[in-house]
Length: 263
Image (cartoon, rainbow, N blue to C red; front, side):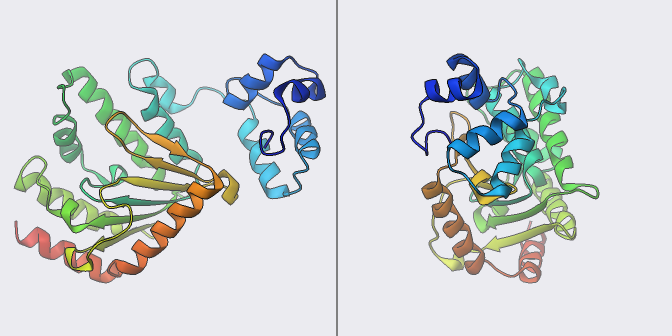
């Protein structure tokens, strides 16, 4: 908000009655900013979108220890950032070319994926990654379960991580999850041809307003997080097109049944 308005950190510090270091800490999320100061800054940045300001105000409130903090110092920070992103989202859309959606993986499937990492992970870290993944999946459960649309390519449905038995159980789990009111699984078959962003694993997490949306892209070095207006518009267009190309929810379930029966 500050940089878009062309306001320097020094000016913002004087405006809020703090030093420049405090402004950097507020913007990086390591120091809380009061609602009054945030609204003062918004006014001077000529931001009038009340929904945007309210969303920022809610994000800025101090919080206690979160469940993912138990893994801090034991797992890469990016993993914890993903858990936080999912928790604070209002709705999510994901696209998966090779892997099953992490939020819809069985423990056996996840273990098989983690054990393919090079260099090999020590067993205690495999156990930690699995525990984090299982806890992340709770974001889909209960009265406040997030709406989640998973676009899964046929290639991911046929990748036998852990072997045929593990894959068959994974496909059945995918079918069971797709019966939830807040979970939609859409299959993109080989017959659909090419599609945008082929090969990427991408999550589009919606916030209380589009300015607070975030795109998370998986990479071998860890997750990347994108949030500029141009990037968000690009990935919204990607997902809109992929949803049109994918099979319907009913046809997707039939397709997954067929793949499972072929194993």
